[in-house]
Length: 62
Image 1 (spheres, one colour):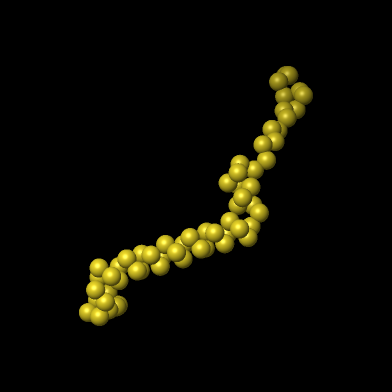
Image 2: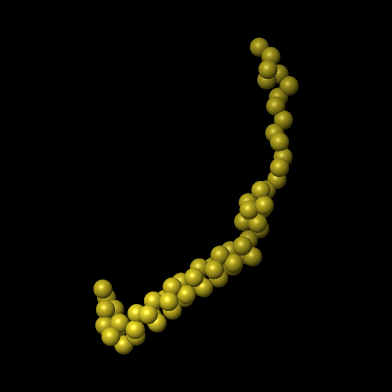
């Protein structure tokens, strides 16, 4: 491990929750930025347009 000596200074019972919390906050902020700054993500999550494609008139005739 690159930063193995870190745990000699910071107790793992304090450091690990801080690291996990920082990752969670960073992930949430990235996802929030994507959802709030794009239009296609909102449309995708809401289901987009519900247009039904019409079949050609002679599709069933042979």
